[in-house]
Amino acid sequence: MRKYYLDNIRWITVCVVALYHVVFMYNGIVSVGTVGAFHKNQWQDGILYLLYPWFMVLLFIVAGMCSRYYLEKHKVKEFIASRSLKLLVPSTLGLFVFYWIQGYISMSISNAFESIPENAPLVVNYLIMVLSGQGVLWFAQLLWFFSIVLALIAKLEKGKIYKITEKVNTPILILLVIPVFLSAQVLNTPVVVVYRFGIYGFTYLLGYFVFAHDEVIDRLSRFSIPLVISSVILGGMYLYLHYGDNYADMPVMASPSAVAFCWSACLAILGSFRKWGNNTSKFLKYMSSRSFGIYVFHYITLSGTALLLLKTVSMPPFVYYIIGIFTSLGGGLLLFEIISRIPVLRWFTLGIRKSKKKNAQGKPDASAKAE
Image (cartoon, rainbow, N blue to C red; front, side, top):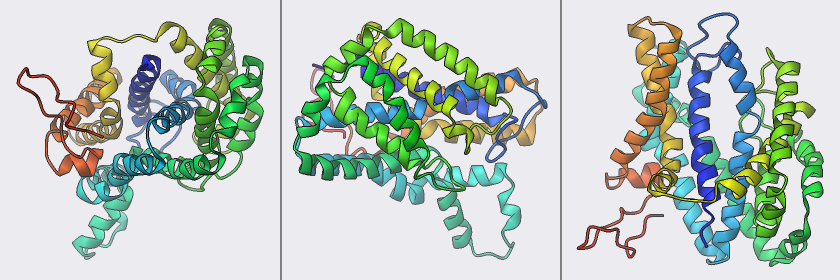
């Protein structure tokens, strides 16, 4: 049976990531890769603190759960092949074919081209843009790596760990904040701080071994309201303690208050969506099927528009945010709809082997597979 609450968590969280980047583009806390702040003190920057600690952790948990459900019906070799096509191809080969454009935009925003000699060969500029074009694709790279590690673990443990974790109750889930906190302290890459192998890898495995149990999520859903309340309180405490600090770097992003808020928010969202969000409709199905496309394309449309506006016009701050929302969500969705229909390019950018064909009745043909 389809778990619609996971579909809804995924696409809504992706939209939250897109909205986060709209605020991020004009924030006054993190300067790398941004246009810059409108004022010295901006209340809207607080939104970044309330979103950043938990949304990617939540996506890794959901990815771990979905990996479990996939492996229940497919062989490990199929799992590796599907994840390599969907995640590895766009985040490696796709950089050379399309996502180097993100590198050009990011370098233009940060004036990075000024540090490159004018007589540098075009191929050198291109390769630099390729390396700078990863943008949001770091998520796909890490997820692919964790999938390969999981495939090895799944072959060795053969479901033994999964059977044990079925009895995990809500108090134990809450206490898991301790190992989650410890995981946040290790395997964090310097400079490019988004590669947090520790916490993201650990929570991905928790999704696979713990949260994939329907019984565990059902128990969690009974405490949805208390968990939501605790998340609001912990979020307020974290904002109070660290507002003005660089929330996206150590030690703030791995601080006790950040991890406690993160974990409480993840548990609250999983339980709440299981209780109230396990439904679907044409719109929800549509958004769910486009979530990956919105994720990989939203930043390139947002940052491209921000660069264009930076060089051409001057407007009140709220107008930039409104335009940013439309170009991030709407632009990302439009770009997906276009590229997903272009042969070859959709393979490099989205890992889609071929589009779904339609039968005589105009309905998708199940024999045509889009991975």
